[in-house]
Length: 109
Length: 117
Image (cartoon, rainbow over all chains, first blue to last red; front, side):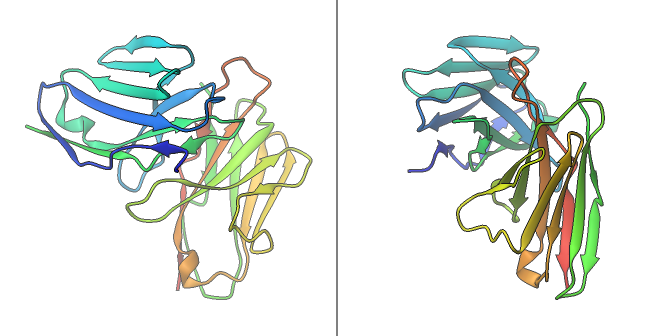
């Protein structure tokens, strides 16, 4: 079983719609959870971090964490073509950051 | 905000030569640095974790004698790919953090595209 699992996609949504990205993890001891966006050929950039159960909102982005279900998600409201990228879920089973395979998001105008 | 500088951004080397990649934290003390490798259309795979002043911890399957990591100061870590071969061609990315800080984050360098010919 992989430590962090994501649907590889691609997930296609129309411009203005809500994109929902999901991630599950295996280590119950994980304390920190992150969503990164990566454009082709570039380094990942941090979108959201979340540390406790519930929702965390930042602009068009909402991260949701459910530690009991070992599940973390990212909602992107009012999706824009510029949001088209690979979204990486990452967790910290200890001090190191472990990534999922990433979900490709395509926003169609 | 925290900034990590990684150099070079691109390097082309001949098979059999060695290449050094530098990762510097510019405005914070990075007690821990990570090195990742990313092949096309794949995710970031952790290669090793380095803590300042101690030997790096390598992930399973990563050759420590081929990928030499040095973390001699709180702001600099280097990755040297020794006797590089075409299969080592990849995108190498460093990340720095300070676990002593509450809710510490991970700051990534801009990556190094290595091509071995």
